[in-house]
Image (cartoon, rainbow, N blue to C red; front, top):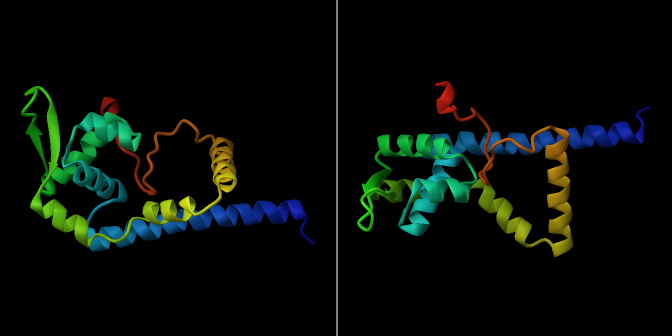
Length: 166
């Protein structure tokens, strides 16, 4: 017979695995429907919301390195979903702007997993939100994952390549 502690450990691991599977399934569905990753979709959403933004602002909002944003934007530029333009106010500054194809692709993309989470999280009582954040931060700490570069995009897959080691 299993102890209650072993049961809780197993239940927590099952819950973690379900979360990981949900992100994997969403990423696969997004790749099939729109041909992009959740992080690329998030870049499109931010650029669309702001009409024009800088790579630095994208990096800050997504909470990832500028190297990661550069790689994401490069892929979107290659697919003609966004363009880089020199700022009209400061020619040294580069802005990322949406193309018509980018808008069309964004409109056809499935509902992002993090938006579903955000809507459900917003419905929780304040104390429940605080408890959940605390518990998730504790899990990240238990997995030595506190300092891993992560954004608000729920995704799995390859880690971005650090240009220093490329």
